[in-house]
Length: 248
Ligand code: URA
Image (cartoon, rainbow, N blue to C red):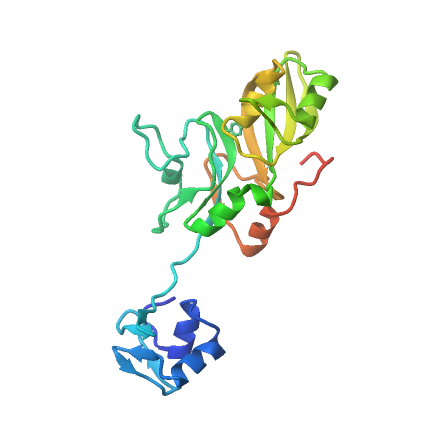
């Protein structure tokens, strides 16, 4: 909300998230809204947000903060915490020119790269991470050796790590080289080091790990260390399942 522009009182109230414009008009008519502590019932009044105080039923009405959503292609060597006692670089330092305090949605290990959402919207972050939403996360893992069909099937069915069985996963072998295999794996849990532990459990440790998607929101050709702001269409994709059976 531009702070130095005049704006109709009912529009201000609705932009602050108090109520719809029509409901805001009703609140004004009912004498429940005050500007600079004076009751205002005149519908034509305009205010200067930031220069006058507006309250409703005694509660100060202030502009909603601008909500920001960013998709970053995290490089290896960056921590996903907001500070690091060991002085390692933190992911938020890669985002320039945004005054809002951003934090990562979930985590990626120091040596994992790929898709990481940053936001200042705590409610959204909670929703994405809440198990009830079962957001799928898709990774490309380079694993040592050549896991056979049975081992991959055991990961897909669920395998015990840290004393608890993992939920079913989806795996596709993308490529085999002489000593390693590229596997795409989609999971919808977010346990710590989950993908690495799953492959450790079948004795094919992960050599390199990259998250390529949250739900259907994919990194595509976003370069390592670069980011882009997400729009509402992108945010919706997070809640859709990764298209199975396809290879990116
Ligand atoms: N699984 C892991 O093992 N590491 C990550 O960083 C993400 C998922």
